[in-house]
Length: 464
Image: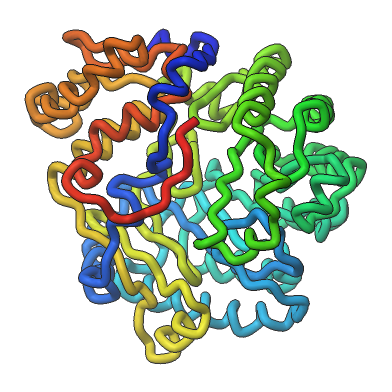
């Protein structure tokens, strides 16, 4: 394990000003903005058929539930606002047909080590339907006894009793959306959520036996200020979730229509946001939270912290995970699968997703096929994002190449970052220094061949 990963994060404001522009978050490489319609249902189907011959390799599932009872103005997810709970019934039927299409090619009974329900709001779906969905997935796939089975919940729609019901379904990890406990900020983003309600659910999840509890916070929201956010941090730490995700709000109203409800004049200044983040880092460190990377923190005894110390931390489309994510079969509207050498994204529109399912087609409409260079660079970027280091010998052994020669151009592109002290480069590999950790996305960008070759026109969030 790298010594750098165990050292505390250092915030160097001068480095952040110099190198903290915009860039991808690298939940995948190549990134989703490189997808196009040359890769769709046919090529994804070929990848699933090839997966049938690789049953022993790691596999996970992701299920996207797009519905929300109300829309939070800051949200950039693929979601559908509706109070008609019955909308989940035809969606459940479509998911069942999609699973049938997938398993007809990949084979039934493939072992899965992780499952994640995201959205939207997965708990929009009534318990009876959610239970039926999980039972259907259990019939189609073999759930590992020690697998990670997680769900995102909106505390406003879940009671302590429902938390216990979710645990009884076999789910063992839970993530709660919070964002901010300040009522003024909550009103500005259309998400009223009392602190007491959230704490009650965290305690219920702990008592029900969930193995990990995550809380999502966002800084940079309208009406936020340093003193108010510091109080949110105190309350979050007092609730003692095992993990905290601290996201930076990206205001992109041209892309996300709900954000047009937010007045730019209400957004905090760059200086105020920097103070909020720096305070969060300091408070989390004092409370025993380890900085895993980007905007994720975990207590030292959490399995993600343990995985990072042991060199087992990885990233996938859902964030950090404690094992090699392997292939990912994603189900539902807009979801992205990663199977073999193919990334494939389902139709982003619900009507289009339904039409393809009704025709008996896989709903994948865009994607990309990875070549040998993509796999090398994906491994390099994953290592940097997960452990803040790239070990030449490990990459050589994994890919059977001379990785230092293969990535010589990327190393050359790192020269300004190395001169500034963001990275250290030697015969063993590349290490991100403690003061460069907030710029790990900028480091990863040096290894992104697609970014260097052409612009996708994507609107990336700020690195720092």
